[in-house]
Image (cartoon, rainbow, N blue to C red):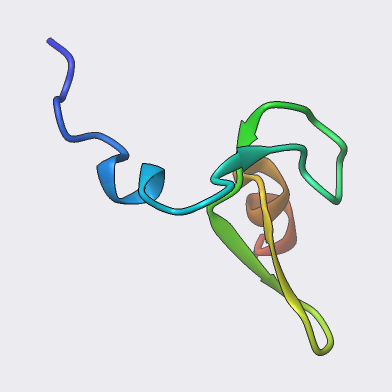
Length: 54
């Protein structure tokens, strides 16, 4: 059975789905912050996992 409240807080944000600025994948969830330099931009889950590998 599906969970009813999955992603509810995420979907309240503006521009929560779009094209990832790092890999260029279209129509993905942009919910993970990339902190490089002065500006923090939102990236996809795959790029966030790739950047934070041990």
